[in-house]
Image 1 (cartoon, one colour):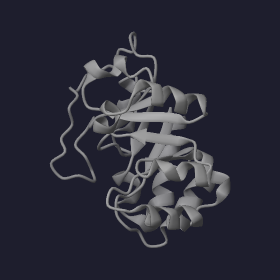
Image 2: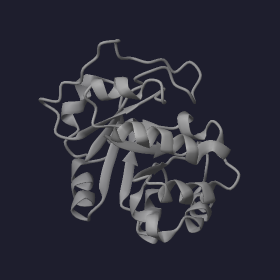
Image 3: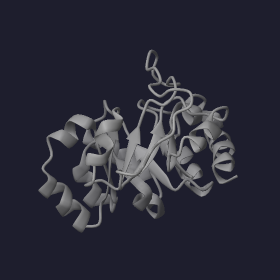
Image 4: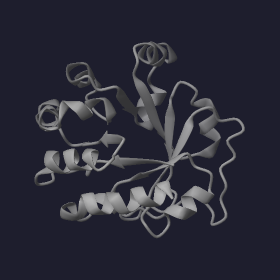
Length: 199
């Protein structure tokens, strides 16, 4: 099961150093999501992340920076996906980009064929967003018969419920609060989660 780490939305002390250590600890895919940041702030952070790892990063904002840093991942928020032509998405795929998006409705997933994978959630009550409640029932099982991309569970996932996500038939899980709520413990927290995904 794939384990995706999403960045903290705000500024974190020594963030680039922590991100480098997370990659060294085995992080395969990192989503850089800084909703309030401009392109210069994002560039400043990317410059501090080892170039070896740039190919494993997905950008949520300022997609034009991907070419400067040899970044292969582009994430489309729901409203951006709706406003982006299938031609543009197809062209980005041909150029070697790995495309991802977010969905909050199961009915939408079969239509997201232009993407390599989709985040779906919140599965459980969010750790990082107050009032962001889980939307799946207790005995949920993801039927992937009509879905041709990977589906990554998102929302409220931590050590205590990660095994439930496996049982729900998701291809992977994305974590934010479980890693970043205590940044000094981010690498330790990641290693615990990584162990659970590989067992």
